Image (cartoon, rainbow, N blue to C red; front, side, top):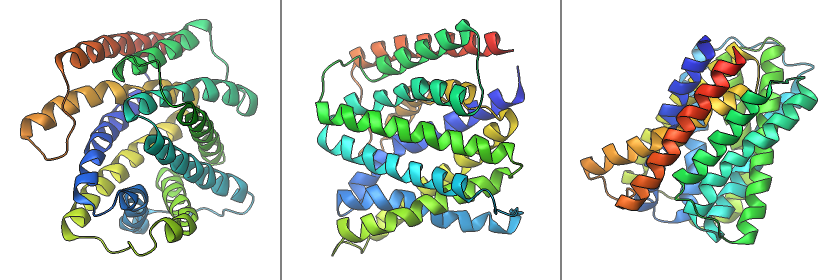
Length: 292
């Protein structure tokens, strides 16, 4: 097993926790729009912690990739939040698995990445597994579906730009800082409109943002590390889909703690998600073995 696989799995586990914990932020915040923007701003601000350890390269000649990664990530983030707002989260979130289709096509086109049929079969299986992790729902708001197609396309483009930066010799922490800081700065104009008169945050929400941002930052270090080691986009994304698998376990553990605002699952949901987790495990394993 190649080292990037273990690093990507660790990133998936960490981000599974932050994804589940983000639900608690809506309980702590005074307004839902605060969660939408401050969750990303907190991660961007916390990047200041790693700045003393970052050795920045000469970015001349790579500004398109830097701005492209931050811009596409910001656009995808805004579209995702809009989709969750107008649609059902249990329908919207599993659609992130569509990113595997976009990344497979874009990486073949721009990064010259091609694999055997078993790798792509594993990718499709992982996407179906993610669908089952979302309770196997086939209906939802068509506007939300359109927004999610745009979201996954933007996120796929983000990964293309990230791999291009790593292939150009940029470092792990350097790329992570560029991604989170640039995307946060690009969202400031949106926040200025959406949060007009609602900028102040309470102390409990500030504490929640600190936890969320710290976990996101830690996961970002390992995710960027997996891209840096692999220098490919498709396989990292297939392995990263394990985040949905880990999220089932994280939900079970956190609900036992009894944190306010956390998701409560029924027995049917646990059964469906167990099936999805099993399919996802087999699919990711197939893709990894076929790519070696």
